[in-house]
Length: 182
Image 1 (tube, rainbow, N blue to C red):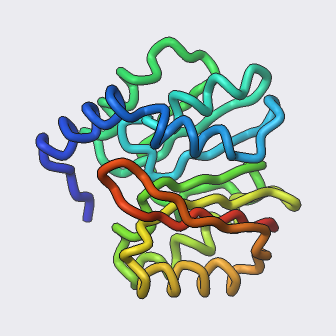
Image 2: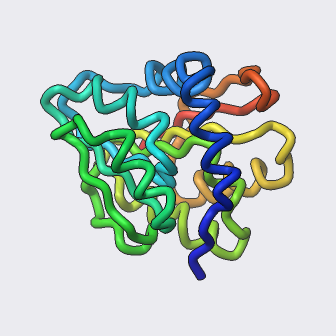
């Protein structure tokens, strides 16, 4: 079942993007393993806050923003309207083509997905990666139980831990950022 965000959540996200975009979203985008020609998936793209900075880093590449919410995708289209290297799609993880992406990233998305759905979502994200591709996620550290499940499912999907770090985000608290490879 598709769940649309409340308008207040969209307003809060827009304000965070305007006032803290560089500290929250650009910093994450800058750490992604990109050289400029990759095929990249922003899974759960929301209004495109991270994608705004990633698209700039892909002059010869392509960014696919995927979300299941029409409200978020409408906001994403507005955020990214000037970029020609971005595709915006309404789809589930199960719809992802196998071996299509060099990098898949999720920014504050996975902890929102029900455990039962994560069991199929994370393997679908792993399948969508090309061999040698990267899965990168950032999730709130306060969601410790969910983080343990996410990391287990990622490893069970055949991905290898590459690096991790804890960051402190303005008004969002501590977050865990992890990079895995296929």
